[in-house]
Structure formats: structure tokens, C-alpha cells
Amino acid sequence: MTFVKKKKILIADDHQIVRKGIIEMIHDSPIDADLIECSNGVETFDHLERANFDMLLLDISLPGESGLEIFKRVRLLYPEMPVIFITMFSNSDYVKMAVRLGASGYIVKDSSIDQMAFALQEVFAGRRYFGGDLLLQFFNSEHDESSIEKNGLEGFHAIEDKLGKKDDCNKLAILSKRERQVFMGLAQGRLTKEIAYDLELSSKTISTYRNRILEKLNLKNNADIVSFAIKENILKNS
Image 1 (spheres, rainbow, N blue to C red):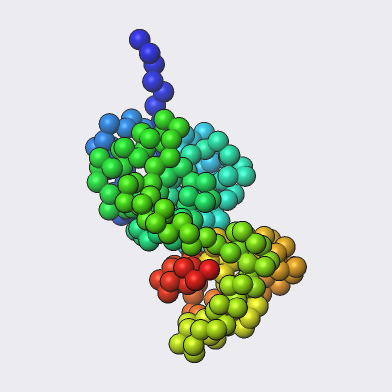
Image 2: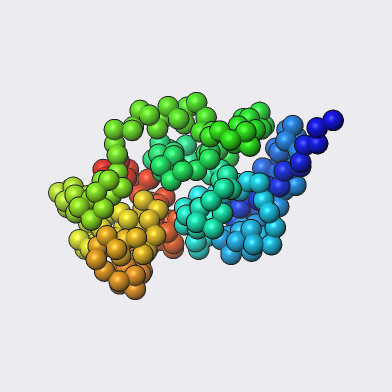
């Protein structure tokens, strides 16, 4: 008789009702797993340090340290751990970002029990899951590649030139040239030190620009910046 090890899954989402919904879906599925909850980055890494997990289900829009930032740290500290993004957004820009960052999968929160179970089974089997419709969105928009990702500092300048040519209705018009460059880096989920390197500035200076951006756009954190960029279709202009 072959012994099948019970899986251990960490669910990181700041809304308790969402976490409970995901837990119920998994319990109602064929997946046999111990499910642990957390609501932010600090709790996520606290759990990861104290126990071995087989998978992380990670919300993109977490308060404080965003899901994208958490994902990058997880990739550095736990490179073998599968990470599936769970989100309310099915926007192709989010899907592209997840694919390019190397996520194991991407699940929309209103997925069915069968879809959730299939996604987890696929990833546990060593494959990636983005769902037929979501993956189709990615391939349909694949030609819209990120200038930042391809060209580093030159990509920032190219994006800024495009944004600067837009009319005064542009939501980023109130930002300075340098603030727009930093905004685009943050919207792409890049770390402060990565943006600092590309723009040849210090991390402290980038943090100062970030604070100005948040104040001018009335946003609270990096997750808000990502959501703002996608809502305004700014990433599609990159």
C-alpha cells in the first residue's frame, strides 16, 4: 500500500471571509491537506519559518507588503515552494505578471470547487495552472511586453516618454518625470532596490519618491499602486 503524505497549505489573504471560503472549497474537494491561515506578510513568513509547507496560496492585494513583494521574497528563501496567486482580478495584466514572475498558478477567487481542486492537483503534480480563459488572455496580449522587464533603465525612459505625451486627463499627470518612472517600477511589482539600481539612485531616494506618489494619488501602499495601474490601463501602455 502506497502512503500518500498529507499536504500542508498556507493561505495568505487579509479577508477572513475569503480565507474561510477557500478553506471550505478545499475541504469539499478531493484534496487532503492541513490548511493554515494568515493575513499579511509578517504572518506569512512567521509560518514559513516555523513549519514546512507544500504550497502557498497568496493574495496579490495584501495590506503593507504586497503579494508581489512577498512572492519575490518567498522565491529567494523557499525557491522550491509552489506559489499560486489567488485574486479577485482576472485582468490579463495580472495574469501576465504572474506568468513572468514564475508563479505556479493563478486562481480567481470566484472559481468553482472543481476548478480549485484541479488547480491544486496540477501544481502538486509539478505543472502550472492558469485556467484556460486566463492563459488565453496572456497569449492574446503577449505582444504587449514590458519595456521595463526587457530594457531596464531604458525601459523606464521609454515608458515615461509615452506617459508624458498623454493629455492632462492622464491620472499620472500630477507626478513628476522621476515619480512616474518610480510609479511604473512599483506597478510592475519590482523591489525598491531593483528600481534604485535601474535609475541609478539610492533605495532611500526611491522610498521618498514612493511616499510622494502615494500622497499625490491618495493611495496607501504598493498593492494600491498595482491596482491603480491596472484599473487605469497604465500597464498596457508600457
